[in-house]
Image 1 (cartoon, rainbow, N blue to C red):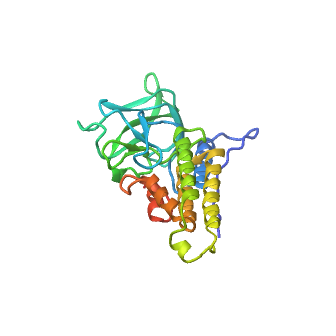
Image 2: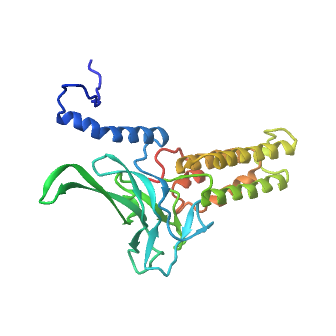
Length: 294
């Protein structure tokens, strides 16, 4: 039985530098990026590493990371940033944009439209003056709008999706955020409010009625507060992806439902309505997470 093989470039004196050797060099970055993506976010084909933020004001009307663009503007703008993307041929690219990107709203309704704002890579063969072919390609990206059903294609990186209220756009779709990010800081403040709910709550709920943790209400409050503290530490001390934040909130919901149920209800309100909640819908329905956002 034969085993799979992988060509790896290794220079040696007198060795022939053939096309397969050059292809092995070209494939190395793709293998490295693919391995990292598969380990950190199974099933994902692209992710925003930094920046590429939608221009507008942060709002709590929607899932974490929701932005309200200027409804009077003729178009939308995203900040400079870095992203890992996949082209139509399935190859990974690390792209860094040093200037903002803009796109016109697709209809006269401007920000009150349905759809997804996305980044799409384009790969073009490079050539010298006179049309002489060279052994490299140019990778560019385009900012535009696609239908919701198209946003899960491998060669599309969704940056924002319309929320059901017709004014806001959810941006936490495929992103990695540092603890200092404004949206993460806003989420941490919401956790502080939830902890106040835990300590102010009166003995109630089905878990209390069934005496799951006994008849000492402080024990239930301590479990709920400890779960919130653990979640806050995770967000405050390390960079997290959308996948990790959704998993964190879903786990936190389970802990609160098994201790102080009123806090669990408030947590669901933090996520917002199912329509337009994107990957955070998994927090609402408790579904199993695979590729989120699709």
